[in-house]
Length: 373
Image (cartoon, rainbow, N blue to C red; front, side, top):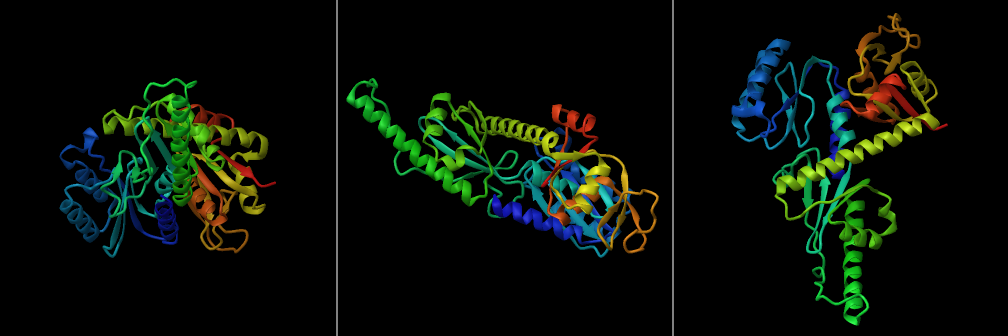
């Protein structure tokens, strides 16, 4: 949902302003994962905090708090705590890589969630029903019971009249033509409802699922301003078990993400730069990158000036060439996250092994940017 996305962005910006040391823990609490039987994630968290040398008071307070919650109602818990023992926990309805850090705040997984689960909507329909889902990565108290699967939240949308039932008339008969007109009217109303929800929830990409014939009729009647937001379609049986339905929607969402990333990389060839040095130069000195694409597992470090919020391309430069203050080493991914937020450039982090990540790694050296000019 749009509000959830804004909240997640605010959390990221707030954490980036904290210098640390801070505990950043991304804990897999997915109840369906075999490794979480018997709440084994609590043991993993305690062991990780011990290994990191997190303050004892913080370890005890976080452990006691999670012990009280029998059902996390999330797939990933993002936990941040400081040396004073204060902490906050965010429940995410998405699966993120499990990781732990004591030191500089680690917001990369939150950026990954913001990227992979940006506003998607799923229109699911057949000849009897119409359902609309939006992807909601960040759980909220009022929505947590409605979120299904990997971040899908169903909205309550109902037409003024049910889908008109056919009485076996052929299209050439007056009754058949009336049936067609009623069906078109039904699809038109559903399209208008879908448009209103799409704009209200800030949905940028749509998934259309259902039987082919019904999808075609609905798509033809959809308002033009949202037709071009459909990035994936597929057959879904609304009579299938709820878990199977959500799994199919998740497969379609992943397909849409893949196709979107593929288009971005194709655009890079036409209007972009790549390679770390070229990207940093275009992003910082020329201020002409509006969209960054990088591998999730991008390696290496850069020199970083905290006072100017700059990545220094000369890795041997212990002093900032602009302000003269001391620089420090910083993981490249952390630096890209900070620069993207600071410069207003969207950052997409690509993970997994597929054609897009292979292309980004082998042809674009793991990082690329789309430029304004």
